[in-house]
Length: 401
Ligand SMILES: *Cc1c(COP(=O)(O)O)cnc(C)c1O
Image (cartoon, rainbow, N blue to C red):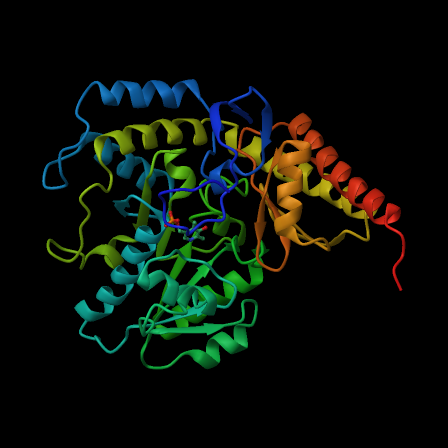
């Protein structure tokens, strides 16, 4: 690794990319990489999408930035379109996923404060979750390795195992204000919540007068073949955090809420200098044009099913390598036996496939939502080739006793 002036917070590869086109990224030597990483579920429309490029160029010729103390027409328009297309009645724009979660957490707590119940600030969250890297969201995530060394964790979060409704109910106290969950856990190991569990959480929230807050930063915005992953369970949440795909690569996030839930967030309660600025929301509108276009989500849904089917075939072909199949739609994963960090590097270096690891030694596949079946078959063959290469290497090593 060469010397870098950057914080050492990432174990970076030296690989860098010069340009991108659709499903592919190209390095300085023109070598093409098939992208099943999407900058961690961000490049929903792949690379170099003409409609997005035009939107950003058009916006760049106008006003780059004003302030949220002025009206930003593209921001108003994006918010209204999200309201028209979803459960939400109000939107707050941010620059990132963690900030969308911060807004969600503040909104949930403030809702009860404004109702005269300030003692209700506790949020039930889940083990294996990931909500971001701010002080608030590492507390919400509860992952000890992300909390260690950063002083006292922000209080007000309890963690229970996902899937266990009885444990959730047992954790509810008079202080509980909300349940916070990723509909499909991404980072933690690509674990999809069942429809029954989501419905059970909604019922618990209704029974105890709590808010249901969903983190769909990774699984939302089309990735599972519906606009939001929670739609598969037929429930309606109170607050949803989104980011990643919403800007297609331009930093943008949003906190979406029911109108009564957002009502107490009046001037002075929250803010963001950049959140929803003209450049970001011009691109956000262009992304939404594509995702809401007739047939787009049906196609994503079909490709999600194809990917699941091909992964199932792969698992049958390599039972010694594939332990379990996980995920939903184009947020797919396989728990594998080789260490996933090395395997991701091998896929990248030897097979020119970009994928990503997740917790529990899961190989995570997050292609752009424009992926075709031919791309899926190509990716599967690259993974198969990597397994075959490991087999060959293992076979050629003389047994040691
Ligand atoms: C990536 C992610 C976040 C944090 O988003 P940032 O933009 O990195 O702050 C939060 N929740 C989930 C589920 C994520 O995948």
